[in-house]
Length: 488
Image 1 (cartoon, rainbow, N blue to C red):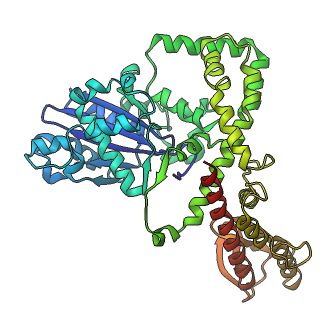
Image 2: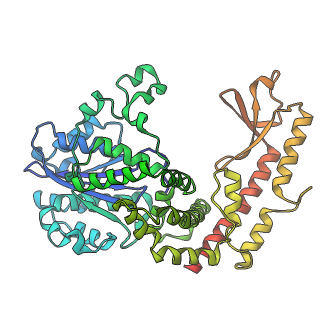
Image 3: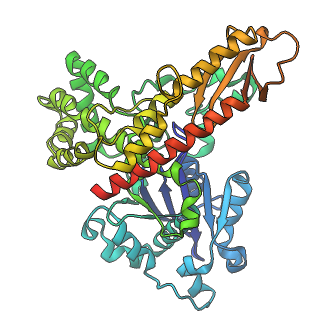
């Protein structure tokens, strides 16, 4: 599963209502493979609780029942979504995915009433008894129906299914938090400054969120935003956090040690873990041929990221070993002393080369992914790698041929500042400062695009080398995926 990364929202929400103004809401986080369920009775005509939760989750997609099946007394939530979240993508589902509507509208439905409960029971990482599923399907049928619709939509839209016992599920999590309505959040400038539209993006630093945002990880940034929008009211959790803060403030070695170690963990760790919670649907070979190499590359990248995170565990264990606060010591016991992580790392290094590390530079990352699996494990993969490093010139690699081509253009067209860059989508392309171009760019350059003060372009020769490089790397990714699946 891919996401836009960073701090942007990744929630898909299903929301439904009955005649008693009881609302069921299911929020699925595509980034962390977690499902948050809420069911409550709206006490205000403006649906303040629902508006607060929608503002908190900031969904990218909202799933609502079809208008033709909702009566006047159950269409208020749909009207609220259409009025306030007009720019957000909305999806409607057949009553098949909303069992409660089938009874309300007296429509025959093939889906059992307890479909949502059955789905959660099969997909939740925790034991059903720990989640209280034996009673939830009776009392909280609305949020479970919304959960069923959300999961079915995700499977249909994303082309994946959730792996059994891998989903993190929480019920009524908002009961342990205070709710701040959307108007107060705006007036208090908690997330965005009040006049950000007038003063520009640089003014975002004046909001409370951006003033406090000194986190080391993306997950920490999202947790900070969540705590500002829904402050805790559970005394035990608050005291545990304060004890942890006291220990960090009084122990400089622990504080700076954690800061250094957190930098070694990949920023996309939660997205990587989420990747292993999903598996593609069974489809035809023709469908698999479409962008299959890209999906293989994402899988290889996720395995490398997971290896990088596991490599940092010994350092984390060393720093947290003597901690005294409940929160930090619990992290040490549940994470650092967990033998399962050692077993996972052992399985990974049986196939993945120990020297392979996660790289943020696109071409370096691409090369690392092509050479992630140890040599000699798969003969076809070794042949694909030789194609990737196809002999052509000086150093005997395609990459050298591309650099030699760039040097040739610098001399022939008197463009000393011509730069060669690589992006995953475009491949290799040239970047030329606009001030260095006198008149019109030579006709040899194609796909000319102005970007800021630079000109991005390519040539037929570079495009040919790009095609060779992309084909070879695609073969490497596909064969690497075969090796990884064979060792699982």
